[in-house]
Image (cartoon, rainbow, N blue to C red; front, side, top):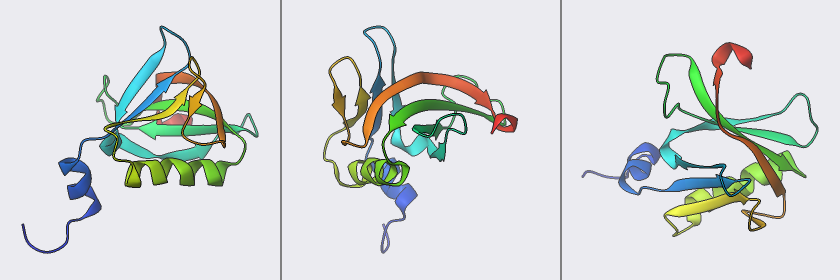
Length: 122
């Protein structure tokens, strides 16, 4: 290894996963290195969509996503990114409605875990 590692190299070296659950039977676990980004939900002032590279449908243009209910988009994103960058846990709970466990006070619920969309939808 030569010099400083890039963010991609670090993420590939250290396997971390993001966990979401909204019921006993509806949950998802996504590798951090598949995180694509965030956007607000245009239909809801409190909706935040987290996008991932597709786990099941690898066709070009598809993505997986999870919707979160947040009180502040910017702070929720910052809290998620801080957990990714600084947590020593392999599995990072972002939103677990069943146990009322959230990455921060800015996140209060999750829905549509692991749903698949097409790039033309956003």
